[in-house]
Image 1 (spheres, helix red, strand yellow):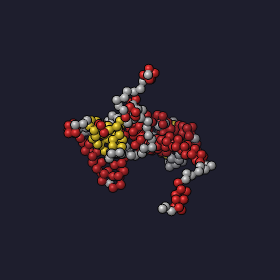
Image 2 (tube, rainbow, N blue to C red):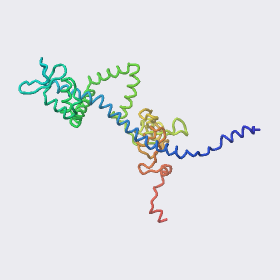
Image 3 (tube, rainbow, N blue to C red):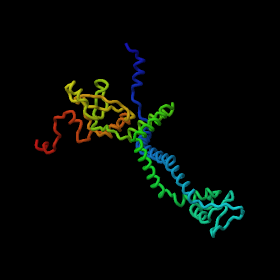
Length: 313
């Protein structure tokens, strides 16, 4: 016979906790966090991507263009004189640290643009700043840098399509794969980039559920094509090739060949399926895509209800 003391403790633990006075407040805070976090994290990721591209691509390109313009156009003279200003060929120059002189027009332009207190100390820095402020303003240089980047990507894409380019790139990839720590990072990044950017012949036609790995357990599957004709001949059934993505990274997974009769069309879009997989089942889509409801999928012979028919009855 069960111990009365044990039963008393069990009943005490099974009692539902009474709501506290602060529960509505914490629920509202939790709901607000759930509302704000998705757009906030989205903006943070976008800002991080833009900042990274600017820091490691656009800024080095801007500096390279600035240095080229500097080498081609820099008007810096030297003189043994110690006077603050000198005149050469009718042009006035202003002295800076190191005894080098810059045209007064350049100095005045910088003073007007950024102020006297931000004027650099050396003539080289002054002229580089002048080039940046005069010729490399963001609204002017950004389209130019984007065009250069697109052209560079185009050239790389063309090079890797020829034999020598493929061989060279294969050697570079093998170098990455041979380094212990870099190998793991490069493999993960390559999987993600291939899934997002690579031109794949694999295209998903619809989303189905497949009983896998055993009866009673259902997995999301993306139909890629009809399966091997040999399998259809062997089984006497129409077969499908279904890609089974895994959570939370849908770019990884495996492919199974299943009879059409063993699949269940979920009536959702590919994007909805990806959201479900990435969220580990938290975001459950409503199966209304393609005008098919779950009722119609369970009874495929039933025609969609027509309001006019209902009225006539």
